[in-house]
Image 1 (tube, rainbow, N blue to C red):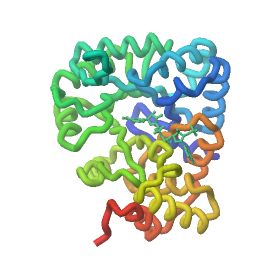
Image 2: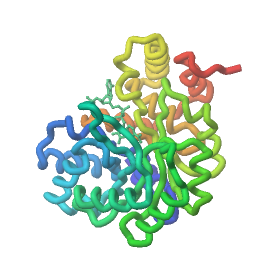
Image 3: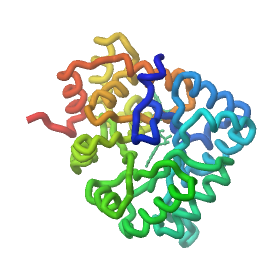
Image 4: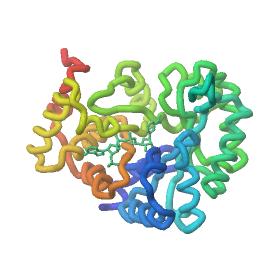
Length: 298
Ligand code: NAP
């Protein structure tokens, strides 16, 4: 695969690989540190140089950090992305999740993540979720301070709607991406206008759960069954594996989306890379857009 095609430029400072490896589930992969080092090298050899993690992903940052400590050369070859803003506490014996995107918390979290990751900076740092208590001026100030201190190269958000995205940018946010969910079963960001907003502003989104967390290929509800049948039909036409079609469908959109792969299996990562060479017909894009029954073509 040509390296040139595998890069997407987010800003003058930062390009990401066109396919990103996600580490959300890394804690359950049961890899030794050496296996994690080998896995990371195998991603890099494929041109997949951007690794995505978050403070809230269990022990993922620490597991990745152990690999970086064992082989510091990896950090020189990748773009490291992490996120902040979600916390867990215990209420009446049960785990309770909440958000905190205050300046003080963001500054503290970034330093804690860097420590766990054994890294001296993050290439991209994102506010993980839409915090209803978000004060864009306060949060943007934190992100800009981290940039100024050289602890992060670029900043962005995740799961934001156009109003909050605009508010953060208006407050000086300098956001270079929005990491959002999109797959043939989830169209939230088409319905909020976020996709139009990003396309107009030439901001490339990162796409999480492109395979709906695997549900697309294992779910038995009507929407899954209908979407899966359509994916299989289109895959047969192109003589590729079904997952390839989903990634090709995501990358077809003019917004220039970057899918995140969640599997630890390299042959499944290869399916996303293969999609870079698959060109769908315009009508096929709409076939899959409407397949689950959630989006209607009028
Ligand atoms: P995904 O690729 O949609 O789902 C991965 C899951 O699907 C894995 O459990 C994988 O199992 C399974 N899978 C893959 N191919 C399959 C197939 N052909 N048949 C059946 N199952 C299959 O992505 P994701 O893990 O949900 O998300 C990707 C990344 O996005 C995460 O790692 C994380 O970095 C990021 N993320 C961000 C947010 C956010 O709020 N910003 C939220 C969620 C995730 P195997 O491992 O067994 O292959």
